[in-house]
Length: 222
Image 1 (cartoon, rainbow, N blue to C red):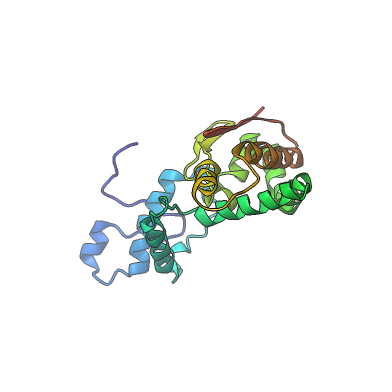
Image 2: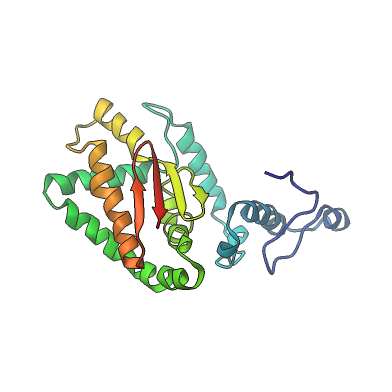
């Protein structure tokens, strides 16, 4: 990663808040300053095509403090295991999948999930693939959507390929060892949940993918 420059890069249509401006105008608003900082972080981490989706209003939200406070409290919870930002979401997926498998409706459960999210995939991602290429499929279902960046701790981006640590394995192991007894195992999560929904999304978007599940999962569009 390149070293940061002294000047601040901003998102399109935002007022730049550089060190010079700060010296000349001590009334530079907190929102303007925060926009400039967040703008720099975003431009370092989000692909160029994704920036078109951003409206620059993040710094205007008045609930950011609450979100940061919740994040700090979550990571402060280390008993019986270190909690992470995705803890509640992972547990929800595991609980629902355990119920679906126990009732013999796990395929219908995964199909319904694909169906509910298939509308934006067919409406937005599929046309983008036709114009910009197959990598848009992976971008659309992983780093672009909160369904993924609120689930995966980090996503490694390569052209036509995404990889990320499995969020389910450590929490499921803790559940099976210390808390309640589920009927599912990690293999069930990989085969009856992750693989099914990714293949379902790919079918909706009209692409073919290759999946490798494990401690680190990898999805490649062919």
